Amino acid sequence: MKLEGSNPSNVSSSSAHAVPASPFNVGSLAQLFVDRVLVREARGIAFTLHPAEKHPDNPLVVADRPWESWRLESYGTVLHDEDDGIFKMWYWSPSSPGYAIGVEDVRQPLTLYATSEDGVKWEKPLVGTVPALRGDRFDHNVVATVLNANVIKDKDDPDPDRRYKMICYRSVPKQSSGYHTMVSPDGLHWSELSTSPISPGRDVITGYYDDARGLYVAFPKIATTVRGHSRRVFYVITSEDFQHWTEPRLAFAPDLWDDAGSLHRLEEVRPILDVPDAPELMRTEFYGVGVYLAESCTIAFPWVFTINNDARYGNHEGPIELQLAASRDLSSWERHFRIPCVPRSEPGEWDCGINFTPAQALRVGDEIWLYYDGSTYTHGTPCVYRAEGTGQGTEHTASIGLAKWKLDRFVSADGSADGGMLTTVPIVFSGERLEINALTKRGGTITVELLDAAGSPMNSFPPSNPFTGDNLRGVVTWPDGGGGVGRFIGKPVTLRFHLRDAELYSFAFRE
Image (cartoon, rainbow, N blue to C red; front, side, top):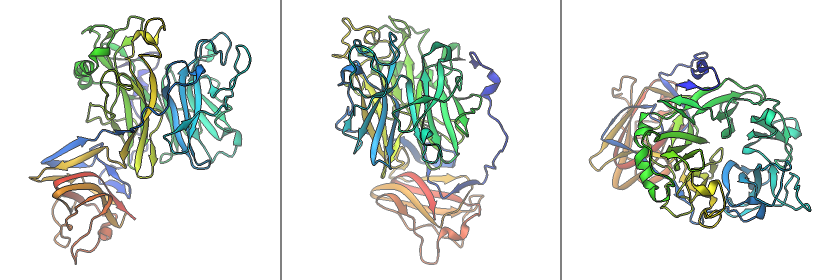
């Protein structure tokens, strides 16, 4: 692969500070099956992707203010502010003709602000801090003129003026265009922090704070030559202090499997594609990345862009869907499913064409909430480039909705009525009881064996009692005389799950 405009040597990750991987230390964290790092062997087991359930009231946020133009996109952040007891959203809209906000005579991307008490019904308070420049001043909810307002609330920063932090793309002034950082005391009044771009690349970037690593993380888009095409791909950069950033390392690039599935994805949206296929141009790229910080891994929602041709108004044509990925180091990503994790709607529905996400999904109680953008058009449709005769704002819209999973139920390891067996690699743990996130069908069961590091039974420790039911935190129990798993804390063991008519989503040794 060739990185355009940077040193290809930055792609390789450092081997410094290597942590022993075997036996694998799972501690007391939930281990999901979105990746298969811990799966040594699976017999009679099927791994199943469980798509999110869409909220019945979707779309939840629509373009209904005159300065919002005709479309909204979830470029930005949704967070639940525990201090204020509300949800806060920073989202994006192109500036509307007739409304000058920001730098005079320049059409700019607008970052807008919304709030909600329940995450479903959203308000757009008129707290805009960016000057309105045309005619009499009017109230609005525009708080910045940037793209991808990735907002982090940092309660630990001793400087109250840096309580909110932003990683974004700034297109003006031209001499400093690129990925930048900003700070704010309240999430509304923003000032520049970086004096030069923190990474090469252009437009889309995802940024967040990783509590477990103690790092600020960002995924910048950097054009890279892959399989003969210059493509949109994503790299990873990190910072300990929000000011000094590492060199980019490659994180997300399409592979042959992605390209081979292109035509199927195009056929799903054939009625709304604007140009015919050009086989020599057909390919897959990544348009952006959202994340969810699970206990033991980072789950990503890559925005998979399928290109069928060049668009009539420049750029490229094609749909964008959300898929699923997982990583334990932010560089190597497993992507076992190349299908949408948020179902694509039928052509003509509000979210049938393009899907984006904010920077992060949220944990709300025992659910994972992923806000996402949906459009009725594909990337190169004329309505994106001109208003006259294209259905802009009438036939074609873009809005923001919500999709949900039950806690950690992204992927399950399934055993049929005939039974299946999943065996882990050798692990060490620190919790005193074993919990599983699982469900069984009528007559189904899950039993667990603790084996030694070689996978051989330990005569002094019998198989568990059968688990039945539907439980996010089902406690595995053992026959009288078996005792608990606490005696094996810190010792290498292997787990073997026997599943019959059952779905296993995760396991954890809890304190």
